[in-house]
Image 1 (cartoon, rainbow over the protein chains, first blue to last red):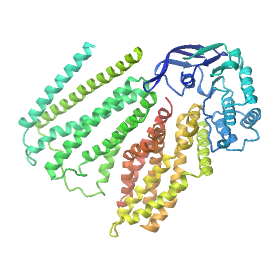
Image 2 (tube, one colour):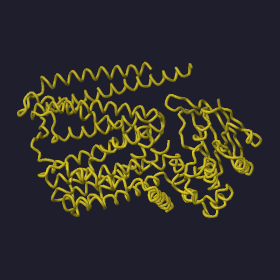
Image 3 (cartoon, each protein chain N blue to C red):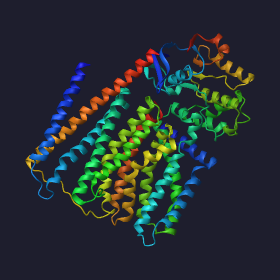
Length: 194
Length: 227
Length: 212
């Protein structure tokens, strides 16, 4: 599903990733750990296709419409409501039965009551939950989750645990986290960046 | 490496010989212009420099297109170097054109000289190109942005030229005329030698600058590897 | 056809955003009228009608610049542009939708500016209206691409006018020419040619500006 050879990325003169070889097969869960600034986010952005490598190469055998990418930011418009944001993404990803899918996701992540609120008024945790809705909306085959637990309270953390557990085998996952205890039992591969 | 060095030396030598020959021919051999006398000889410097500047911008755009096509980072440096040279030749065009305007018409600047006006527009455009490069972090994104802007540049050249011609109808009537001189055979020969000299100068500067910049990048990589 | 559905969804969102936040359009309207008032005081009383036409074009150009500076403001927050870039739609759809939004704003601003110009200065003829419409297409096409470029840089607001102005000198020539010369057809044709060349170029190159 994902293969990288000699992968490296620099930002200006700063080298964030160097000489990384990687092979993730379909249905695996890759756990990426490492301290801040070790290149976890960069690696996920490279996998998502947002960044291009400056050295080596990376290949992902999926069109970008079947990848779900959770970033630090929610990647949603602050001035729009939760529902309007998901509706826009639903249209762009050509999600069948858009209304029902969005409704079910909002329900599941506990945002149904606040669906008509502007995202700008959301707390950090609510934004993260909305971002998870956005990522799962089109039923991606590859999920790239950058710090999925950040900002979430205990009840919301179990929601993420559920997502990881239900994906087991049917979906490929790459999870970057600096608190990997939750993910470790499910991981088929671990990569520690320094 | 030695082969590349040799090529650079040969290019530099050829450019210098052509430059000296061109200048000598233009100053001593080319026939005196009936209207403008001796001062018309700046034509042999000004016009080849202007044409070389176009060639630089065109070369830069070609490399930009190659970059977008192949995504090979080396084209970014090549495109940038060509545009850089283009700006230098462009400034020289503005300076020599301005001198010529002073000699011919007694003013340092005239909007009715199309080529001069066009070069002013291009000068502003390519200065913005440098501003763009300086305010984006080096990397694939900057390479893309610069390449797209360089491509806009070659589209802008003919469009601006057309615009400047059209503007002459209403900005102000053309007072000065400088018809393309009816070049005699010997004038044409001198012109061609001068053009070849300027193109050779560009090729030589381009190869050297590029080699220098590559060496610089290599050095930085090595230094990093040592750390 | 999904292409146009994508464009429609994105353009609808831009209009919705503006209706909700109301930052850009009121600023553009106020700016263009203020500029016309300033121009009244900067024109000597014996200045020709042609001079006021020139100033009108400057006002329109800078109004467009004001709007373009805000074109990607909503996307810059929260990195939404990355979200759009990752969607499976063709990236040029993002450009086209943004262009349509810019065109709507410009059109509204000019719907105020031209009557105001007629009131303060000279009557507005059909040539001027035609030239403004054609110029808008070019300004929106080039401007949207350059706004995306500027948004990717550190200098942002500072960079956009520097990138934009040299590229739109031909638009000013076409616009002013169509208004002051007896036979405007050549100038209108030139504006159309500009629109065609730069719209195609911007449409084709937008992908490289927003993605690596």
